[in-house]
Length: 454
Ligand code: UD1
Ligand code: CA
Image 1: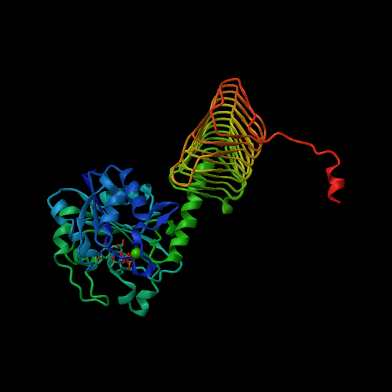
Image 2 (image 1 turned 45 degrees about the horizontal axis):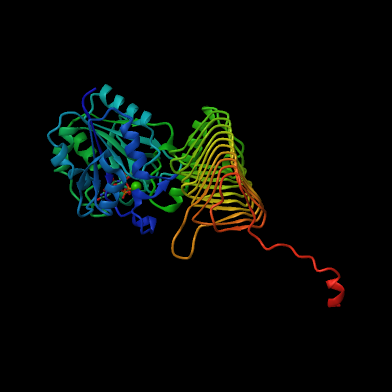
């Protein structure tokens, strides 16, 4: 195949979204639409990608980084005008240029590949990716001549009644002979219902010039959904979610209740892991093999080892080892780092703390800014007192220490290796290794006192 270039249209505000966020940055399954498009194109063998930016240019560039080059469309005069902005970057290249909208996140790389192959086979100057829609409202319609050849594309707002009945739509993805594209763009006018320079007009111009213009009809309309408003955004989310889940299931992940499960586009999940109902996995999360997640767990940007169980819990920006149990009703806040065989039980909150292999915090505790050694046992209701209202301080609990129930460890403080803190203690001084610390009032029994009170 000839050299392939790609132009992504992403300069529009997206008025119909009624949003402060620029349209192409709205996430679908946790990933901005335009990022889906760029990632998909990256999986093809393309020489260069140019993204047309305008509204929110800086934010779009920040999102895509060096995965694309950029051309600015300062004023949004239409899709043809948008592509024209790539001329200084691509105008002199020889090859095939794929043009795709930043608001069609579901088009698969395989479909783009099929479009390119069709374009090559037909030796065409332009090939449109089309689909047949049950309800074509809003899309440009593909108008064919008696011989069945593509003659033009008519936008919804410019279509007459007969044209509106056509169900074959323009998906907004095309490939062009690069030189022919930039030559023809110069001839596109804006005499239409929206007063815009329409990219689809290139098709009619080339056709009238006697060039070969073809369409590749993709069988799956769902893949070509253009997201113009929040209703379509929800549809895209549902379709993409189903696709993500299918991929995980085919890779050996059990998902008990697909409709109540949400998995981000960037998540990685190992074989034989079971997702129970109500699981939400967000961001760049990696989960190992043989885990049981849920019911009702919410895991964000975290790494979970193998054979670990996370029940009814929230885990954010954290790392959890192998064969570890979290929950039910635990909260791992950012920078929690749990080793293997750790147990975090119900109503336990952990923040910015390391818990080494075999450590147990089974009930009702707060562990913040702490280093907890191997096989430490922290009794029910214990708290690392890490905050004096101004600053945070660290608690260190060395290997094999035992913290009795309902203890306060007032940081900065260290409990030495193998030490024992008696239940109910408020520890304000370091405890040496192997020592017993008792820091509570002594019990006094006043005999018969209750009778005196009566
Ligand atoms: C467009 C097509 C329509 C097709 C549909 C598929 C045109 C005129 N119409 O309509 O035939 O059926 O996509 O989804 O092309 N953009 C710019 N600069 C502009 C205008 C738009 O960068 O000046 C970008 C937008 O950010 C968007 C894309 O181009 O990502 C498409 O624009 P949009 O306004 O959504 O076009 P549609 O009305 O959906
Ligand atoms: Ca659109």
